Length: 178
Length: 206
Image 1 (cartoon, each protein chain N blue to C red):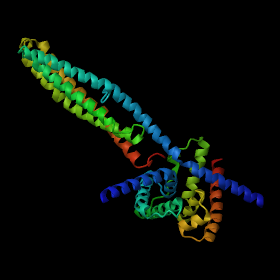
Image 2 (image 1 turned 90 degrees about the horizontal axis):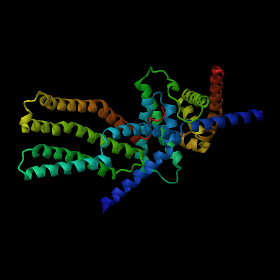
Image 3 (image 1 turned 30 degrees about the horizontal axis):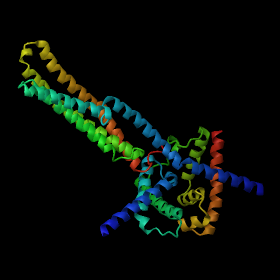
Image 4 (image 1 turned 30 degrees about the vertical axis):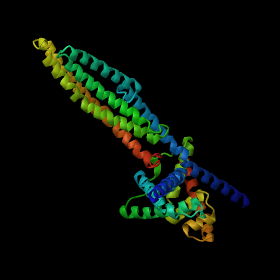
């Protein structure tokens, strides 16, 4: 009887997990892309995030927003991964994502702009990158503050500064391209 | 100043949209569909060539097995040694019938609307076909030996000896070529596709 209940629980947990991953795979992939420099690393990071989400799923409390819970875990894993990767390959220069085209069904110009946005994000310092990725994902200041552990005021100040930096980077690359 | 803010907000809003559009669940599925389409094409070629698990091949081999068995039984009733090749042919067709039927039955346990199941099922088919390609020469060779020994009238004919010798060699060479150039690459491709699909959409953004 207990075994049947356990099996049911595991099956239900698996179904929840698959649904969670399926609904959020694009969000996770965008985040992975911001913290990795090669496709292999991105695959490893995605897998690591999936493992950590699976482990953390039983502790998820319904009062917290799924996205906040997910981003908190994913971001922690991504930061740790980024740190480990740097230690593993200390002299590796940042490789731009030029060789990897973004698979959305838009024209070349839009695709190129999206690539540039990813490059500009990747060039930000890690904490700024976390904040900006969450901001671009349309998280509120409160959510960003809960996920990153920064105060809301600090988040606001950082976003205002990073926005300028990001727009500057985009303008510069557009100017360079023109 | 207010105008600047509004323009900046617009730009940031566009960046947010662009960021979210850069990788979407739908765009991740595009690669999945492309992969399935390309595998579907290869599986069509596989079906044309081997047809493992198809109704056509299954019924044909079943019919041939019964047909050869009936001939062998008739010869056995007449106490003729000529039944031995037919018994071997019936066994060979029977084994092939089993492979086709087994593959057909296994299909029921897969949901062919799901990419993972479609690839897993076809991987099983290819693995069965590899096994069949390996055992077919073992099943066919005794037939040639028996043909040679039980038709002594033809032993003096060099043409007959050539045919008996050449056919197995051609058959085995053909099997080895199929195994090496068609089946093994297809199995590798299906395995890799299945792995990619089981690691949710890892490989689909490049």
